[in-house]
Image (cartoon, rainbow, N blue to C red; front, side, top):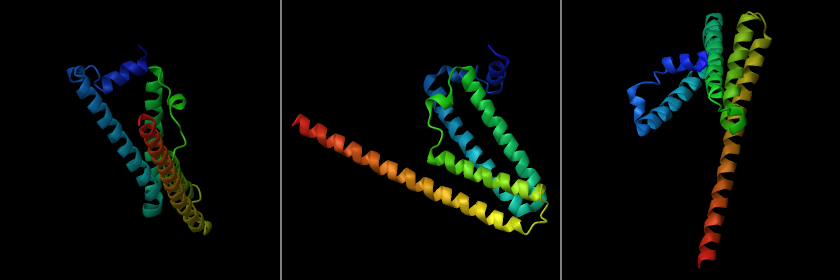
Length: 170
C-alpha cells in the first residue's frame, strides 16, 4: 500500500469497526460525499465574496481558501486514482454543476488578483468585477437552462419508452 493510501486510511479512520457493516459504510460514505460537496461550495463561495467584501485582507483569506480547496480536491483525486478509480475516465467533467463551480472559483481568483496584484489602484477593477459577477450569474443561468432541458428530454424519452413498452405488451 502506498504512503498516500496508508495516510488517507489513517486520517479517514477507515479501519474502524464502524465500517464492518456494509449499510453503515455506504450511508456514511454518501453522507461524507455530501458534506465534502457542501464544504467545496462554501469555500468557493466564501472565496468569491471575500475579496469584494473585505478588501486586501479578504483577498488573502480567499487565496488561502482557494489554495486549500485545490489541494484537498487533488488529494481526493489522487487517493481514488491510487485505488484505480479515475474520475476523468468514469464521469463527465463539464456538467452544468461543474461549470457553475468553475465560474464561482474564477470570480474568487479574479478578486484575489485584483485586490493583491493591482492593489485597488485601478478604476478598471470595478468594471472587471462587474463583468466577473455578471459572467458567473450568466454561467449559473446557462447551466440551469441546460440542466432543465436535459432533464425534460430525459423525462420525455422515459415516457416514450414506457408507452412503447405498454403498447408492445398489449
